[in-house]
Image (cartoon, rainbow, N blue to C red; front, side, top):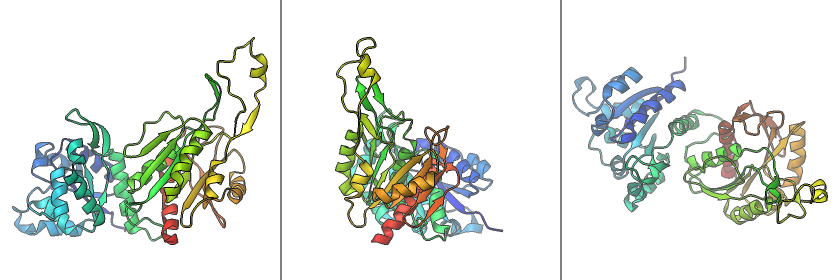
Length: 412
């Protein structure tokens, strides 16, 4: 019988400590064995009895008091696959960065330096302070996995970056870290921050090609796949530029989002960001054609019947093929092929003409892919085509980034 992976969850004195209960549940649902260690301050927000009930294990808050476990910080560090501190206050973050070990949690963190992940949560001004940013840099350089805080309204009423990352993102990051440590396949990620220092460009969503000020040509793309890719890349430490067509999605925190409308605007924004990108993923559903002439006013029935009946079209720029043809050595380019039939065969044809390293073929139409949270895709390269199981777009994003990271590492 395979032993379940074990995560030691460290909880610090933060208003977001109550969310640690949800983190415990999320990890347990994934089959992870969870034990909790708390700082004394954390118990002012959530009692030890809560976590003991959730985990079925006693919760430690002090290095002392248990003669049967005289060196608990070493036992805790050695018995877990990952020490996850969530939330991690600015104070504990600073202690961990400086190697201060003045309580059970920080002593354990010092002993678990090679399997440590932290999810900071604090006021935006504290997070932005040079001291905190220096501590984050120090930890990242040491290989500590960092989960960037989200932006939004904070407990104090300020609005900015500092909120604890969404529970589902923390759980996903911890599980990805565990998978990277336990996986044997060659392209498995070795760290949740394996894209640290890399720049990832993603295009997402549809384009709109104006007929007049109130009408346009477009498609059903929701942008969910591109946004999932951008968010997954950011969680892995990348600097992300997201060129987004018009979508009904909230801008992801910590990502440079460039909103555009037309294919020409998307091409211009992508062309500017492309030279600096280590990985460029063209997930947008760009309109193939646009009206040759755009009316400056609303075309009226009974007045502009000919213009409404016959709309002359011209081709839009092929963003993927044009930019991929200029890629530098070592740069990774991924394109998408949305097909209603023979999606793998048609993607092979597209691969031959687009200069990409990978084409992600996806079935669309009849309620498939567009606006859905899951879809069926195949990864098409010069010598292979592998269809993935029907999966969520977030899972597909991880798989694509795993492939791109592996290819990027092989090019170094």
